[in-house]
Image (cartoon, rainbow, N blue to C red):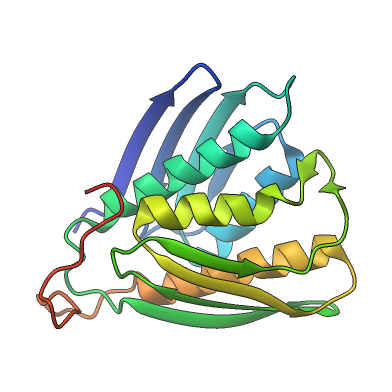
Amino acid sequence: MDRTAQIKRETTETSIVLDLDLDGSGRAEVATGVGFLDHLLTALAKHARFDLVLTCRGDLEIDDHHTVEDCGIVLGSAIDEALGERVGLVRFGSAFAPLDEALARAVVDLSGRGAAFVDLSLERESIGALATENIPHFVRSLAQNAGITVHLDVLKGENDHHRAEAAFKALALALRQAVSTTGSSDVPSTKGYLAGGSR
């Protein structure tokens, strides 16, 4: 089964091109103009074993908000497209990920109902050029457009870089588990149907 997606999105605020393969090796080529966002997305792709190519030209002369939000929208839409009818999926995933003193937990459900509940306990206003308030906003944008329920929290940690990166690694591991296939031809739902985020 081909579980890939190619998306181009053009607005007055951003221009984004994305290629995604859910059954990749973790290869990432990410250039958003926001260094720490690139770092987080590279970690996400690596540990989810997604192949991800993403370039974004955004209105960074204003701030990073539109770039972060739109990258979340496009990645979420790509995941939704690549999952197709969501047949034969594990569907649920959960993971813990440590990074030095930080420990994060992620639980996901490819439910078709996009929602994110995020508590990263970040204290700094920004990490590099990325406003910390936009990190949970990215996760919410991704979840809503992918049709995924995400619970993501940081259980402990002192360094915000570590907290944020551990959270994205935990999310990656949970997604890797959830998008895995079972070999079944059934939709993993008593309803018999899982609607994606963009459908």
